[in-house]
Image 1 (cartoon, one colour):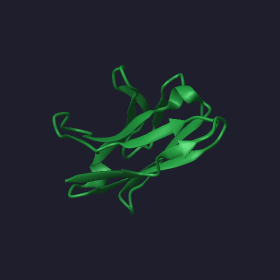
Image 2: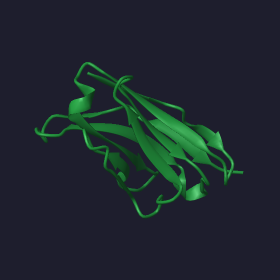
Image 3: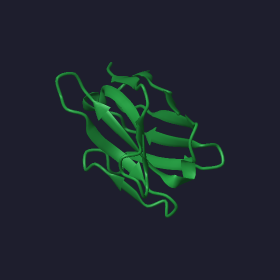
Amino acid sequence: VHLVESGGGLVQPGGSLRLSCAASGFTFSSYAVSWHRQAPGKERELVAAIDSPSGTTNYADSVKGRFTISRDNAKNTVYLQMNSLKPEDTAVYYCNANHILIPSRRYWGQGTQVTVSS
């Protein structure tokens, strides 16, 4: 089982990034997928989630209207489009997959660093 994030980097305030998380080794469409982030000295927090098969999305209040989560089950990939980035969005971003019927079946990626700075 693998979840591999990509797309992180350094961006100026107001800029955009798109994160990708490629899944392998499990039936992706049977999993709800979410993005979480952890800034230095802070707890990991949920950023956005997308259910399966409904595609229902949820967002943290801090990113509503700026971030968009989406998934492509044919490509076993989930995306996080991040616009109007702020310095407080700086964190390591992690992808998570959680089986829709078996909560204990949960996987994490290794994380990708996002730094918003001028």
